[in-house]
Image (tube, chains in turn brown, yellow):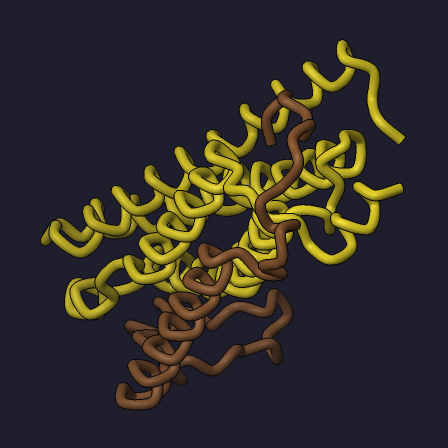
Length: 74
Length: 165
């Protein structure tokens, strides 16, 4: 947020309750969310770096540190 | 309650610093993620994940929290308000989303960094990097930055009511 303070009457006040840019933004945001959901649904469901760890994307909060235990290479 | 000009300038300076710092931290994190994906050197992959974990917890999370806090202060301490302008509301929502996803994601990064520290070559190669989260996060932050710079007009119903008072 910048220092200039709002002083002028706003165009959103002239009978258009929601400005067009806000409507466009909402449509774009919904489309982006749907795209992410579809990508996650099409994929294995797991995402993020922990999908590569033993146990996949599950959180391993049963360990004392709440971390995935390292693999035993012995 | 509006802040006096000197205090407002100081708060704005802090807000800009931490907000831009947040973006810079994400860019650095993304660079490390790309490095982890592209390198074949085991030590480099381990180092990249350790650095991503450190940058995440000690730079990005504090800067993101500070950006939200100072943003709220700037909104509530100036005539912009928090719910009077659409661009402020959208900025707040996007910032909250970015911060919540960041806080939910960081334990995964720590787990992966811990794993990478002891993993063998094949396991490290399978780890890859972490690109989607920082890339989407960076895009979100750039949208917020653009909104904050251009301040597109548009009063909310509440904002119009307050303006008439």
